[in-house]
Length: 498
Image: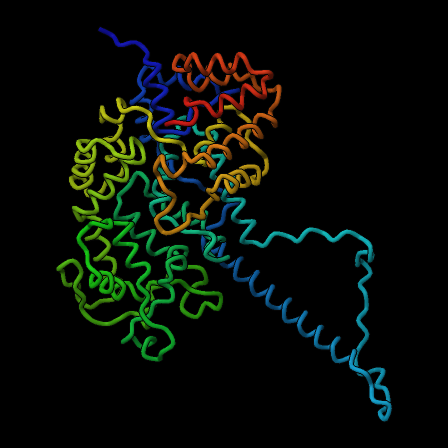
């Protein structure tokens, strides 16, 4: 007997596994998914390079950081020039002694350039630094990829892994300049590949090495360490064990943290001067590497160069505690704050059996009945909510600030998580009264921008179809205007929960 379309499952496909169905010119997503919702999502996983985001306008990290270094050098020159001019000005302002002749020509007069603005002219806004320009360009590319995705499951995977292996642009201008390229180079190529490959790419990326200070970690007995200004830094090693692989209850000790920190000394990147390599690129700096054998989780890693760290990461990627940690976090993200134990067990087994194949992990999630039958009990994060709203009204802003601003207001500035833990992924973190009030303000602002251009009843049909509740339909029908009706829709349970 043939199985007919399943509107409810199509709704779950877009809400639980994507960023919601699209409206406007792209309306019809639910109908396309209804005949085979699981197959609809799985088909996206088969598309070659579906997670990649390459553009001639988005530079690789070494170019981004070279630009940043050059800008920093220019700013330094400008500061030094201003300081010198101020000193000259202070000297010339000193009163002359009446007993000494005035040296009129001692200080050259400062001429005003012909194109200088008039004294009463309004100052031009300062030009954005390259780090900020790069950040905004990367942000826009990320937002557009989500908004125009036909399915969007892979983009949800990208966001999951980017948050799992997070860096924060608030750390420094360098990390800000490289935050987008970090996601494009270390996360996206491996989202449907092997976890071990992603782990290595992440831990050797300049953005991560700067964010968690491994670039400042020197083996105490290394040649550079013995010369003496810096010592061992355990930040990256600790987060690799606690957050990236084994998990906080993964069975490691403080001694393991210290051993791993020693193993990955020398993992750094070349700075502006390029003394140890091409500026902005990963470098294994042997002079900073702690010599010797080190024991990690009971296994001895023989003295070596970069191979010592690579071997340790490869073993951590295959560890049973890593499988359990990733499976739990994966199920929590997509299904529930407290996911079914059977689902976690199955995902962990797939992770182990396939040597961390993330395509298999994603397919296993889609195959699990629990992932489809569980209530939609997760609340969209501010970013998921905002991008889902843009998809629904089919009005992609031309300026990334129109998205970056509301994200900041709602407490989730892009690529700026509060800690190496990343953004929280629980209902309690986002469902506070203050948080909902901010979402209401953002919903009203979105509705105000599109005004009469969007019919909220059409939007509801596009994003929910038959699943739209009678209460939501009634609220929209009774609204005083389309603008108010759309704001009510964006705050409805159908829109907020996933």
